[in-house]
Image (cartoon, rainbow, N blue to C red; front, top):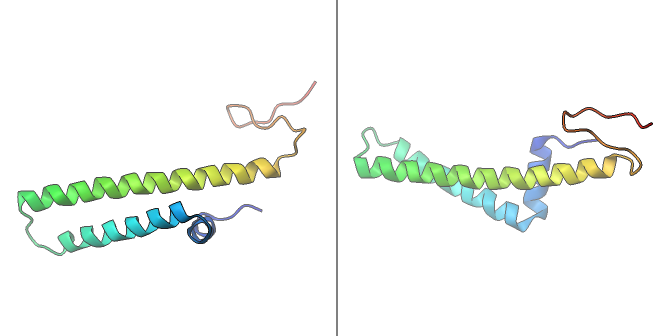
Length: 97
C-alpha cells in the first residue's frame, strides 16, 4: 500500500533529519514572506527581498520533493517482484517472451 503525500511528508519529517531541516527552513521562509505580505505598499528593496525569499523557498521545496520522490521510488522498487521487468519508459509493463 502506498502512502499518501501527506503521510510520506509526516514520516520523512520524523525519520529524515535533512528533510526535517528543509521543512523547518521552508516554514521559516513562508513566515518571512507573510510579513512582507502584510505591508500595503512595498518599497523596491522590500519587493526585491520578498522575491528572493520566494525563490529560496521554492528551491527548498524542490529539494523536499526530490527526497520524497526518491523515497517513493525506493518504496515502489520493493513492491515490484524481482523477476518482473518493471515498467517501460512509457509507463507500461512489457510481456516476456
